[in-house]
Image (cartoon, rainbow, N blue to C red; front, side):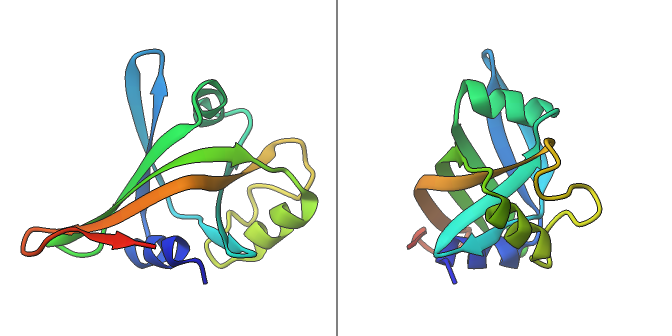
Length: 130
């Protein structure tokens, strides 16, 4: 399994930051899927998140493992709306079943590219996740 996906599943809820004009925007996510060794997330094309990513595909993700360590990921999002990708995301236990259907015209999927991930702790040096 993709190590980034594995770590994001461990934190369960992670937050994704985007930019809208000059204002950061942050929202919770829980769906992440490994597809052929790549990390994918999803959203709806009617959401502000989608508009922000289309304007600037650079994002940061962050989630807490416990009270002493957290995960930070910087990446670019690359839209890929292949129907098979959508099916795989919806079949993942974290997928947004019931909200979307493959090819429904609303469901969009993004591959994380140019990924840099680190686990941080109050008690030790940061650790790169590869």
